[in-house]
Amino acid sequence: MLSKSQISFIKSLHQKKYRKESGLFLVEGMKSITEFLNSQYSVQSIYCLADYIPKLPKLSQKQKVFEVSEQDLTKISTLKTPQEALAILEIPQEASFNELKADNEIVFVLDGVQDPGNLGTIIRTLDWFGFDKIICSQDTVEVYNPKVVQATMGSLARVKVAYTDLKQLLSKEKLPVYGTLLNGKNIFEVKWPSSGYVILGSEGNGISKEIKALVTEAVTIPGAGHTESLNVAISAAICCTEIKRINYIKN
Amino acid sequence: MLSKSQISFIKSLHQKKYRKESGLFLVEGMKSITEFLNSQYSVQSIYCLADYIPKLPKLSQKQKVFEVSEQDLTKISTLKTPQEALAILEIPQEASFNELKADNEIVFVLDGVQDPGNLGTIIRTLDWFGFDKIICSQDTVEVYNPKVVQATMGSLARVKVAYTDLKQLLSKEKLPVYGTLLNGKNIFEVKWPSSGYVILGSEGNGISKEIKALVTEAVTIPGAGHTESLNVAISAAICCTEIKRINYIKN
Image (cartoon, rainbow over the protein chains, first blue to last red):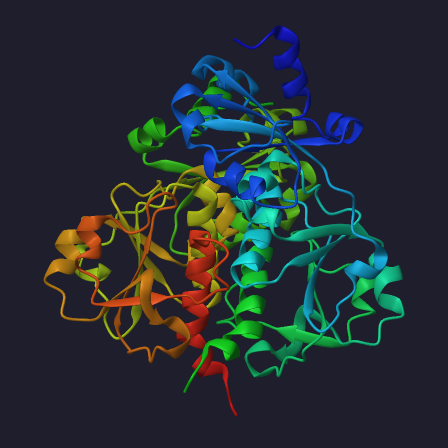
C-alpha cells in the first residue's frame, strides 16, 4: 500500500508547478512506460499492478518498482480509467539552441498550440513519419502535461522537444520557412527541400503576426471551401504526408 | 435571468439519456450556431450574452432568443470557459438505409470510434475536403455528445451522420471496401475509384474482426516503423488527402 505522502507527492506531479519544481513527470500505461524504458529518458520508479510486474522489461538496480492496488493506482493516476502502471520520469535537459536548428532535415515548429491533445497527437504523428524533433514557442502547452504525454502514446520517448523564442531562432535563418496560411501555394504542388522549417499556428489564431513575417513560403491545404480551418494536428499530419510521401512511391 | 427549471433543463441535455428522451442537443459559440442556423438543422432557442445578440443572423419567429448573463451561461455551458452563446437544436431524423450507401462517391465508415474529440475532428476534416456523409457503427460515440459537436467546429451542420449495423450495410455491397490495416497496399500508390467505402477502426482495437472480413482493399499508411499506430482522426485525414489530392494538382 502506498503511504499518504507517496500518494500526495505523485498527485503533485499532476500540476505543472510541481513538475517544474521537482524536474519530474508522469507516464501511464505499460506500452508507454516500456517505450520510455527503451529510450534516453531516465525512469525513476514504477507503480504497477501485481499482474503486470512480470511483464516489465529488465530494470536497473536504481529503478524502483512498487506493487500497487487498483485503488491506489486510481488515486495517483491522471486518468479516469487508470491503466496498468504509472511511472515517474526525470524531465531531461532541454536541447541547446544549435541542436534545434534544421540540419539536412525538415523541422516542425509550433507557434502557440494550446490543446494538450493536439500537441501529443502531433508528436505521435511526427514519430510515425520519422521526424525526430519539434520546436515549440514559449507559449505552447507544456509537453510534460499528462494529457500531452498520454496523447503521444509513447512517441515522446523518441521525439526531442524544445521550447524557444521562435523569432530569435528564425529571424537569422537562411533555410526556407514554410507556414500553413490562407492564400499560400497549394501544398499538393510543393517541391519540398531537404532542409527547412514548417510552422503551424495556434488553434484560435493561427500563426502569430510576428512569426508570420518570417514565413518565406506560405502553403495552403486545398479544400472544398465550406469551412475556415482544419484542426492543427490534422494540418500537421497533412504536411508530414506531403513531405514524406515521395519517399514511399515506387511508380 | 434564467429560471432554475430552465437551467436544469438545459443541463440535462449535457447527458445522452436526456438528449435521447427530448430529441434535443446543444451547440455552443456564435460561429457554430451561425453555421447551424444556415443549415437544415432546426434551431429552437439561443441563450446569448447581450453584446452578441445583434450579431446573430435573422431568425424566424419560432426561434426564441434569451439574453443571459455570463454567470448563467457558465451554469448551462458544457465548457470550462463558455463561449458567447449556447443554442438548443433538434436532433434530425436519421438517414435511411438507402441514403447511407455510397453513390458515385467515397463514404467514410467508422467502426467503434470512442473518443468524442476524434469523431468531431473527423467530421470537421471530411467537411474540409467536401465529403458530406459519414456512417458510424452502432457502438461509435454519439455524435450529439457536446464534445463531438464542439470538435466539429460547425462542420456537423453540413456532414450527414448515420449509425447503422455495418455488417448488414457492407455484406451485400459490390463496391470496393477500403480498410486501414497493417500489411495492406501502400496508400500513396492507391488509385481511388469514384465510389466505395473507407473504414477506420476504433482507437484501441482498430477495425473489428467481423468488419475486417468485409474489407476488400487493405491499405496501409507507410511510416518510419517506430510506432504501431496513428490517431484515428489523423488516419482519416491522410485518407481524405490521398483521395482528394489528385483533384487539386494541375501539373
